[in-house]
Image 1 (cartoon, rainbow, N blue to C red):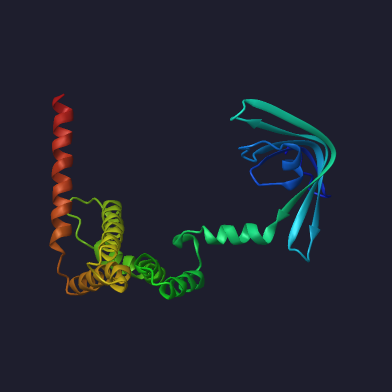
Image 2: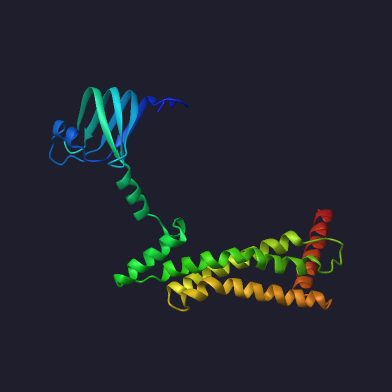
Length: 244
């Protein structure tokens, strides 16, 4: 549309690509093998709502309907002064909900889908994994907090802080574990519950362990080794740069 006013119902410069079957148009474009694809142009239009049918009508004014038939290689066109295009919101919303992926659904919608699939004897593993992930992922902020505090107070021998590096590595490890356990669940290696909660339990346990180490003023050796390795790589890089 070229123009959609903030106030009022009038629309201007309308272009519509309509793949629906319209009896009014089909009677004019009656062709064997027709694909019912129409391109509609209109100078202006109005939206008219119909609360009873839960639909709307787009009333188009001063336009034309175009169709190309690939089977006959013919182009057809009809003009109109007024043309009503029905928009059935109820069916449109139902189709959208039907085609939603699990990650686009609400928790209640996933539960309802699981119930229907079980009644039909279908496998619901992926849906159950998504449901458990919905419950587990919000705890990730607590897990990252448990990990961040002890790692943030690790000794810095070189006076540098590698907190950003630790953060990236932990995030990568967490989300790789989430994907890995989801794959295990789909292959029936682990139950759906553990696929959703295992990463949270694993990294949460690691965070508690690191807190205990920090409370005892005992350094976490892998973090120390990583810092020393990064320092060594940085020194070698500077040496190569100076030699060059």
